Length: 120
Image (cartoon, rainbow, N blue to C red; front, top):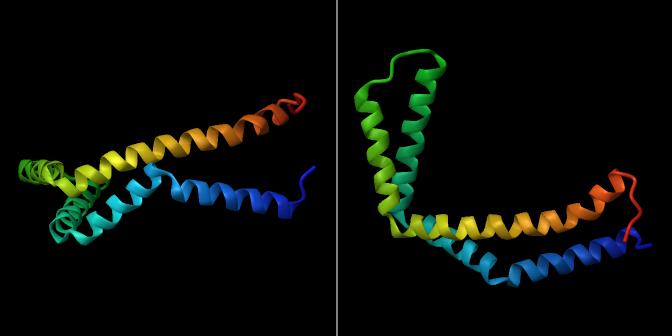
């Protein structure tokens, strides 16, 4: 049976393997590029502000003007046309898929244990 130190060491090894995986490298690279792109950051900021504005109106049960909806839609189109943001979204989808696979693999033996099944 592994002790806590052994588990930590294995976790560190998994972290090192993940940090070297091309999907992870691409994701963090795309994140850095998007953060460095002033235009992408501006669009993201404006989109977030507009989304929060609309959500506030909805929460207060206030009418949402057509202009507000159009502004949000225009910002979504600007985000979709940003190369940096497109790369980030693609890389993020790949990263999430990889991490879901890793989490599922770790969860499998724990699920068996929860169900009272013997470990394999």
